Structure formats: C-alpha cells, structure tokens
Amino acid sequence: MDISLQQVEHRYQQGTPFERLAIQNVSMNIPSGSYIAIIGHTGSGKSTVLQHLNALLRPSKGKVVIGNRTIEANKKEKNLKSIRQKVGIVFQFPEHQLFEETVEKDICFGPINFGVPESEAKARALTAIRQVGLTEEILQKSPFDLSGGQMRRVAIAGVLAMEPDVIVLDEPTAGLDPRGRKEIMEMFYQLHQERKLSTILVTHSMEDAARYADQIFIMHKGQVFKQGTAEEIFSEPEGLIELGLDVPEVIRFQQRFEQTFQTKLDRPCLTIEQLIEAITLFNGRGNSK
Image (cartoon, rainbow, N blue to C red):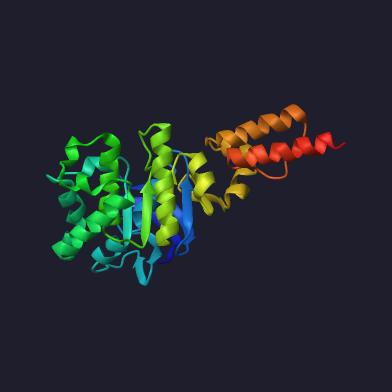
C-alpha cells in the first residue's frame, strides 16, 4: 500500500492562543514494500509526521493519501478504523501498553476489536508470537511475568496480529542494550522481507537508518531538509553534524582513516563489513604499487 504526504502542514491547537506550527510543506512518497527511515533531532517534526501516516492526526493544510483513501485539511473522513488496521504503529516502549491477563488475550485484543472472530484472532496470535521469536507456551502467561525484552516482543506481536500492510516503528529499540537492539531490528527486517511490509522507521539511530533503509528523509525545523539513499545522505557527514545529528560510527571511522592516510575511499561505507572490504582493497592497491 502506497502512502503519500503532499505539502502537509500541521498546527497543534489551531485557532487558539497556544497554536504551534509543527510541520510545513512536507512531501514524502512511500512506495508499497519499501523501507523508509525518518531521522532528525528532537523537535524536528518526526513524531508529527508519524501520526499522519495512519490518520491519528489530520493535516492543517495539504493531504495524505493512504492506499485508496485521501485525508485532506478541513474535510472530515469517516471510518478511519480501516486505515489504522492497515497501518500499524509500534510506539516507543510498546510494552507499557500491555494490560490483559494473558499474552494471548493481549495479542488478540486488537484483531477482535476490529471484528476478527476469536478463533481466527487466536490463530493470528500463535503466528505472531512465533514471528517475534517467542514460543507458544508464553501465550498463557501473564505479560507482567515476562522480562522487559519479552514484553516488548509481545507488544509487537499485538501489532503484527492486525496483519497490517504498513508498519511504522517509532524508536523501536529505545531502552534496549546493543544486543537487544540488533535482535529487534533484524527481526523487523526479516518481517519486512518475508511479508513485503512497507516499513517506516522513525529513529535517532543513524546506524539503523544506514543499515536498513532504502530511502532516508531528514527532518529539520518541521520540514524535509534532505532525501536520498543512505549513501547519498551519509556522503556528506559534516552537513549532518551541522544540523546537530550524529553519523554512524563506521562513517566516523572512515573519516579518520581517510584523514590519516590522506586518501578517499570509493564510497561511504555504511557497515563495518563494507569498510573492511574497502580498506582491504585500498591496501591491495597500495601493495601492488
């Protein structure tokens, strides 16, 4: 399912003394099956954009096209429930939203709320719990008896049980250790590939954006500052640093390597594997002289 934001503006508390412009003139095209990252420092408008992706917020100006539905400024839309079924959002710390007495009931809550029969909802819960790397025995446990990492996976399973076409990840690894972060991101990437899910990652992690995304949008002061592939975005790390953003550690290491040896590698390396390969080729060329 394609999603398109077309010159979207959003003002909070519009028409009151507390009115605040959050985003303006934001245009994004998110093709079906793509993996998009939205990056930017705190206050850049990322979260406001995120909430337009399944009509939690409506634009003050412009329009948002979600599949065959169009959400426009000053135009009321009915049955937004169907949009929210197709566009699932995993918010920060989703485990805080668990509330049922068993894991199975928690995962089934969303599908049943959208009219799915209980028997099918339970079948979806079984599939979803396996997709997040947990075993079916956990379904009858209380979610509050689980570890923090398990609770997060259960909450994610609840979103997957809705069988969305699009999944939006809002800082999905917040609070996790490096190992847990890698496991969760690899899990989402595997789901993206296997289920052909459109995946939209809203993140502060430049490493995750560089490793997984097909296209990256940089938000700055409520606008799209730059869009491009990971190589295009990180080919000029100095510009990102000027915006107050970090760059992947591997890019910093590449910069130090190039400064030390007064050379320029062929392209920005987005993973440690790419950097090792580039340095190996560099050494090979040096040894052949």
